[in-house]
Amino acid sequence: GQNIDQPTEMTATEGAIVQINCTYQTSGFNGLFWYQQHAGEAPTFLSYNVLDGLEEKGRFSSFLSRSKGYSYLLLKELQMKDSASYLCAVRPYQAGTALIFGKGTTLSVSS
Amino acid sequence: NAGVTQTPKFRVLKTGQSMTLLCAQDMNHEYMYWYRQDPGMGLRLIHYSVGEGTTAKGEVPDGYNVSRLKKQNFLLGLESAAPSQTSVYFCASSYSSRGAPENTGELFFGEGSRLTVL
Image 1 (cartoon, rainbow over the protein chains, first blue to last red):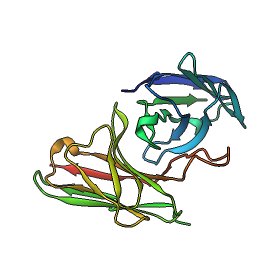
Image 2: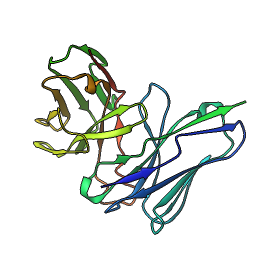
Image 3: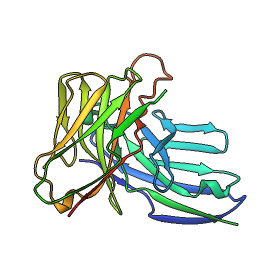
Image 4: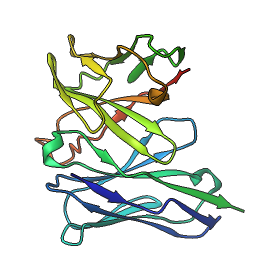
């Protein structure tokens, strides 16, 4: 089976940097995804890592270490609109193309 | 471009009633999925399909059936609804991650269907 862990809640202030960690245990691995989900809305794709290292996309970066089963999402220059849930998901081989999600981290950004 | 469309958006059922959720995508994606999302539980995979005429079980398939008769549609059925099936249901679709490196195979989600079973 799969086990994906991430913190339930985090808080930060506008302009700050926040790092959301995700650890996973899977019997196969074919990529790790981060999604953003605002309350009452659908999840939207943020980033994808399949090889070790850092992927940067504007204010958001995602890091992967396959040997440690570890990823993080880094959000810089936080804005109020970044208040949302951040979902870590893995694509294990046995689920075909499907993603298995963690329970999500709710980030609250205050002024 | 509509993307992934789910109908209905909201539905209230009584225990034992049946219903079908319809998902339609216009992106010519090969793969489609049904997830449910409950507070504190995250998104859980119910069933998925890797092509027309094929379906497979996910993490929580019990009490649900699915069909993929057309490539663009993926139906989720509840034959006898139970209060434990009260949830927000999300449909998603994706293209293959094979081929070009930029093909992540990311999932594109519909807006969700909120189902309440009394």
